[in-house]
Image (tube, rainbow, N blue to C red; front, side):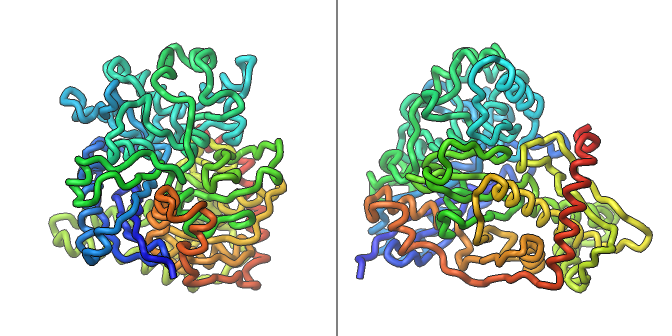
Length: 554
């Protein structure tokens, strides 16, 4: 029997941070605590109609302390005294400007209410024009195409596009900025007290998938290229980085300040950060042939392949292929959909408009909330009774928040076709569920076309645990079993796995996975009656997407 040692895994999501305390000998999750971002919950600094989503670093600092402290209250003293490491997963690309000392600009008094000085969330699509400029320059400037390891298309969700947009919009922020830091890098830097932008350990995962970093051209794109994109980027590269680290390495050790705040031992290792989907995939047992779908508000898809399998090939249209971004020693492959659960939430909000507006003041807030909360379960019940029919003309395109994969294009919009006077709310809701599943199939087809075989699908995140219908439709559309893992905190568990390796409890991620990965809770198998119907629906979905793409980009 291995002697039990414990690690803390952190999952910084869109709305909150989750802390989980894990026994490294068994993978048992002993305690979990969630702290919601308070300013974010109030809608501060966000303008959804403009696709602007910003988060104040104080939300991250306050919720970090609260969630870890609350998780530690639920475990015995011997566990608390044997915390060996901390692992960190965050959303991404979520990045923000910092000064020469590494202070996030929004923490300075003059910028404390300025959204441009805050972390620009992954779902912020304000930099659409800047992404287009990066893509155009990469193809026409006469040198290396620095997007080629990121699927060949740079997205508005990513690092350089966000930086350029802020620099164009806000001269004061631009002048005060020394560097930009990914949230996945900033949290470990905060915990270890190593805030110097030139010394922060930078995540291979974040750099390779979102910042056009690649070892073959010496790190980040050169100054010459960045200036071609825009003169506003001149000089910024000097405040960034050349080297990156995989997340099995320590970013540093817990500082005295944070050890006292959290009542933990000083100097325990804090692992290099990475993106939530990548760490969640590790907790779900990712390996070659296993495709992990992290399904929440959006969907991130992760798999890995050996270098021998990939060779010199470039997998176009995805969100990157990066050595060591998921499992060190393998090529991490990322894809995804810009909206998944958000599609269902949009429909709920659409039909609940009268409750929020007309009935406000006539019903209590509690009654209104109860009514709104019941909408998706009731729609799901009605949609579950509908038998798929290939003659049904109703079909939807799932690009309500743009398209991430295949071939990122955040200008695209969604569409619903075939509505008639017989269309019902449950029928339309099922069509939206089918649309997200069809979008998922388009991604897997892209991998298959490039010779990357997928023979197992694992779904983690909030949506798989909330909706059996969503996962059953996904299994039917993919014509593959879909496995649901037992852990409710797969991303935090994945962060804990990396913490265990950084603390040298295990020698490798693969060794840690043998003991710590989440067990299987359920398996959804395709309904053979539905598979042929969805095969034909996928043909229509693909054809309509090609036909409507130009119109949906306007």
